[in-house]
Image (cartoon, rainbow, N blue to C red; front, side):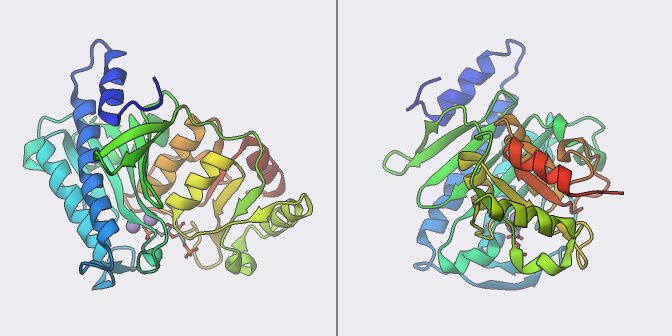
Length: 322
Ligand code: AHG
Ligand code: MN
Ligand code: MN
């Protein structure tokens, strides 16, 4: 593995490590790569073409849908369905999973957040796409309800000052940066590892009075005493990306209003937990490791605390769950 290798070559090299591989996962990943390059080009044109603003719709989560949410969702559905590599697709923007005709013999199911950070679309702040791939086991909706540690691959694409593809197939985490002049993702961040300890905490502190448990307030006070600084973008992809590179802690706790927090287990918490753990960090819901939670619903939410080992272990000393 060398800096400068493109993502396609990297995927094919990884496949070679498994002599029994059929190439199906490689094709699946290359399809995600193609779809997200198309999304990236639309994001780059935002403001010039009509992709900003609301779609005048409310999704299954009760949230307002933006035009770019819908566009990204339809691009992903189109590419992933036509690839024939996915038996089923679950999306934040779909009430129920899709079982594409082309994928009836496929080996994998995929859950995704087509566009993360919707509130930042109109203000030119980083947004992203998150995905999580599991093996097809029962050939029904229960294939999505497998624990996070069973993920075959997980990743995110961040549409930021540059576009990056962060990927793990269970052998560590690698980051690729899109070179727009050749249209290829190039390995720029090989074998990403979280520092043991960081200097940043990332919470939406406006919710502090509602946080559950309230002992979290003491935890954040302790971090401040230790000299930590605060960064919170409000796009999970961006906040987690910074945390994976610089260390520290990102969290979206439960609160009095949202008993399970805000973030969705299947296509936000679980893939981000997989990447964090693969990069040497920790990811917990407080009462249990996120990767050990067995989902019961496609769109269920879960409290999220992830980051460097020092900060997450310290958090677990502060919070008590019954
Ligand atoms: P989405 O845009 O996919 O609905 O996700 C938004 C999420 C996540 O990106 C972010 O971490 C969180 O919402 C921010 O929520 P608050 O505005 O409540 O802090
Ligand atoms: Mn999201
Ligand atoms: Mn989204």
